[in-house]
Amino acid sequence: MGLLRASGTIGALTLVSRVLGMVRDMLVARFLGAGLASDAFLIAWRLPNLFRALFAEGAFSAAFVPMFNRTMAEADAEKPGSGKAAAVLFAGQVLSVLFPFLVIFTVIMMVFAAQIVWAMTGGFPDGGPEKFALAVDLTRITFPYLALISIVSLLGGILNSLDRFWVNAAAPILLNVCMIAAVLFFRGETPVETSYTQAIAVTVSGAMQLLWLMWACAREGVVLWPRMPRITPRVKQMLLLILPAALGQGAIQFNLLISTSLAARFLPQGAVSYLYYADRLNQLPLGLIGIGVGTAILPALSRQIGSGNEGAARETQNRAIELALFLALPAAVALCVAATPLIRGLLQHGVFTAQDTVGAASALAVFALGVPAYVLIKVLTPGFYARQDTKTPVRVALFSMLFNLVGNLILIWPLGHVGVAAATAFSAWVNVLILYYLLHRDDHLQADARLLSRGMRIIGASAVMGAALWFGAPLADQHMTGGFFGRLLALSLLCGGGAMVYAGAIFGLGAYRLSEVRALTTRRR
Image 1 (cartoon, one colour):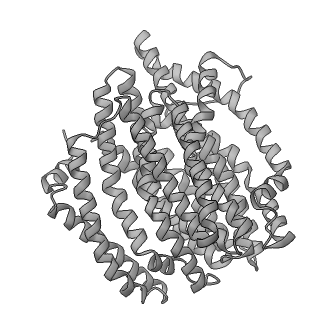
Image 2 (cartoon, one colour; image 1 turned 30 degrees about the vertical axis):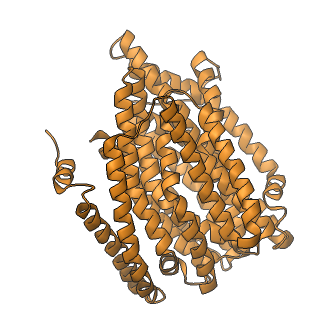
Image 3 (cartoon, rainbow, N blue to C red; image 1 turned 180 degrees about the horizontal axis):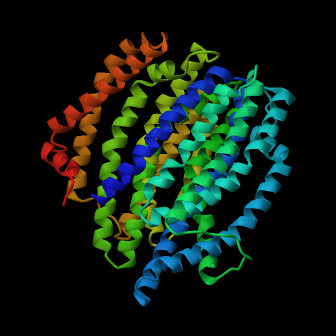
């Protein structure tokens, strides 16, 4: 129940953020299209987004949250009631080391932005010096976002450890609100001018998220100020955990960076944008399910393993995998089967053409094959991080990145940007299979009978829904080029109809019973 509530809270707020994100992408597609300005902005946005995923969110969640919880538990064991103060003191020591590093790192990245963009894109052979110069300018504008969001992630880790999941989960909403406001009220006359307003909005949103988290922490009695940096034993231990944790958590982002760089170098103009828009829809289940479940189980696993209750930890992870499959498998099938009407209904207007729809939809259909893997990576890696093992996921991630690079180089020539998507999806499955094998080998995770039984029924229900969408998607696609309300109605019928078929198949195949749903939704005394 605790896992479901926490995951539901995070997932619901992430849903709001992702819906606003889709509104943002619809507006950006309308006014930037899939050409020079769009490719340049997405390259500039990819860089701070990569480091945010590596160091800010992924690494801090993996390294900081278990140590914060352990510090709190140890202090409470020695002197009841002193745990929160000890943990907050540790967080302040981390901030004092983190803050100057972020300032120096951000300045260096802004100074060498031209060299970094060239390393990623080869100077945009398809777009010339104008496109390259635009990407460099936009990179310098967006990069301060990294420093701001890194401190946000530290404060968010504190709030998650205090079971205030909703505050941190709501923060990304501000990013989308800022970018939507920028494109609606401050856009320029041309796509290039509009790309500058979007870049400025990214950094402004970082400042707004920081103020939001500072206010929420103050309400919980947590106020942190940078002091003279001092490497205490605990801070040193956390720093040693961060780098491998960043590499392990960032496998998907690294794979996307590799894919984006290859597309920028070797594929025609627009390929970067096709991959971005497809990935935005593809990442929706990861945000709603994988991040929600993974964030919710990490503090629980840390407490269970810290108290020596391995049985409870295995039970928690089995139920997390079950919940992830229940939500991720139908999402993957829906995105794969209905890729074209989804892209057309959401993005095909303004300067985003029917040809752009075909390009983005073909990438989405292949990306979607990896959706369950993307989610399961987020569910399995806490099993290592809760045991303060950040090195094993790194080795697995490095191998999957190598697999992705080789796959890209093999598939990009015959399949273009679709081959890039295929290599990314397959490498995610390689990552999942190895992570599960290692947890199973060390007796940290065994799939129990309930997971195996329900997993097969969930697969069956997803197949039934896929068959229904196979026939319904072409009918819906005919109504995706009309007015806003016509598109909205067609998308609602397509998605709602698929969800109803899936729900009926779930109960029909016995994966879940109505009594279980009532028990989960009934508030216990």
